[in-house]
Image 1: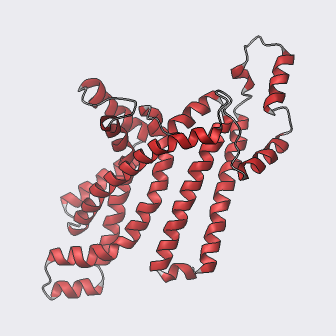
Image 2 (image 1 turned 30 degrees about the vertical axis):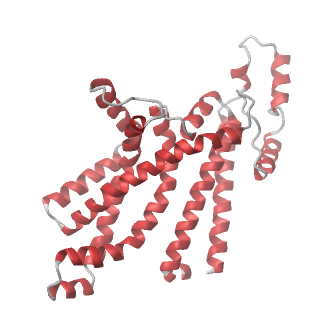
Length: 305
């Protein structure tokens, strides 16, 4: 078990390292940020002085080395716009992002698991085929497009809910539904598959032949034994929701890390982008690590693999 934990910890470090490396070089390809902060007619000398001040006049490999050295210490520099500490700005927005992601996860669970169980129980019926078809469509619909449709219907036409902002439960409704769409679809299909696998086991067939009530078979045996992979998927999906919140927050102007990253990308505020990627990568990798450990604990075969 110790070897398994060490291996997974090394994977966490590798994931964070690769995420920072890829984003560092990608944002460097997006252009020189000095063009956004100086007038178009600024003299060449002023541009070079500003690039030297920001450190952009150094070779790329030197910039990368300095960045990684500072990142290990939690230092991502200051925002190019406000001059505030980049990591602090990101951490200030994390509670709003967690609120959105956890709310979407909770909504996904209370909708998807009952639907998945019912779909498995009513296998090959119209209800089952309809639910599977709807979940396929749900996984294929882009979040931003679905969010815009919700804004048009419930904010612009019916005027029942606000289209943007935060600070109240009404502001949370549309972003949560938008973010939960993919997870609901995924959970329904996964729960259905896990339930069908358990329902095909010999002990379930024996219990059914012995006259055990259907409700008891479903709740006491099938669902109970399906929960391990379902719980693992739920844990992993929290990381996915945190990443997916970037687009959703941008669509609904939700005051979280996603919106901050979107604005920073548009402004080429590199320190904030890198600090945000670092935090999201850390959270995603740690959630995966915890889920792997829990799954390995309840299923020793995983450790052997």
